[in-house]
Length: 505
Image (cartoon, rainbow, N blue to C red):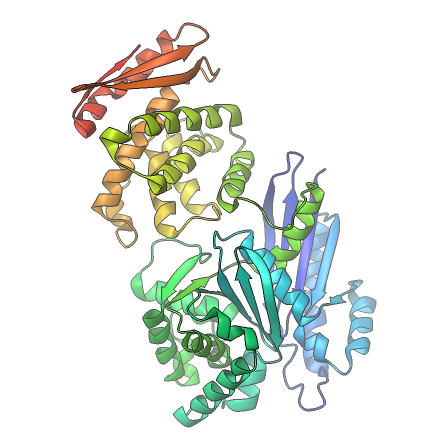
């Protein structure tokens, strides 16, 4: 079933493409992506017609994308066009010309369909139940109300970064007066969306280049240690800081703000006003940045059909993503799931001495499943490779702090003296988190030793706590000398952490 899918999103400001591969075992991976700014909606004016220069730029880029698609020998291509083409008076002429010159047959989707794809892209990759999604494009802004992970209401407003900039702002210096006018205009638009009154206070999930720029500004300012922007969270004051910085700068200064791309500097203010005013309108304290949206939504809709999934949303975002990574890294899945089972069983039976709860249990469940992914690189130092892979794989459903903690559990499953220094990540985790990780890593380590032969010979464990010891009774279907000898190497660490002796029989 080697299925390669290309998805092209022809926006008003940029064209983006992802190429995804679906493997025989149902796992998937992004194998390429491309993005080019074409400013298709530039200068559409009152008559709403796409201009020759913008069309020329767009067709040139589509031809480049076609070469990539051919190089990857893609099986299926999905092409969607959004607001600029949707609103264009010369839409038919444009689509015919694109088809003639590139062979691409674009589907022009409605604002509501765009909003729905945004929703699918977010809800299948971020673990959130209730939120408002905003997607700020070049010529439109989509809003979606999500309740209990379900799509409830949506609206598409015909205003985006390019349109608002052309309508309200000068390219170079932006006067406070013009900015105020634009903010009031957006507030008025929101006032006309009746259901927005019902979602006051909900967190906002933001998509689109302007919002990613916000996150990049914040990330550069604080020296954030991780690469991915997906599920990056910002407080209202952090959004305000970046907003003030951008709106007070002239065009040349904006180009030099770390995090603002030079090709976006002229429209970034127009792109940020919708999110800033929405946060004020909804009295929202938190913005969650999503790196996934329309393209990923189109992907998940088709991917879940291929799997004969009954729904368009994944039941458990986190563990679906973890399992996808296990398949990508070709680990022994039976062994990983068995180690997870034993680790969680010991954890559950020893609550009395560790005092940890559901949240820590979730981290152990992820860390113990991923403990061997570093073997994909090499057996030697696979715990170190595993640390790097965990930090840099798309693990959907985890906050950044949780991701770092899981990476440390993976790294310490062989040796508690892993040389990675938690202080490198002290923006995300503190000494207490690191101590928690050390304890959790012991459960992963002992569970792995109890499946030393990777044959499941230790089927289950019974834990008995006495005043001064923990006794682990093994339920085995064959001799377990190898497993016991390996597991007892962790007794000193156990004694140090929990002040009890360890016996395994």
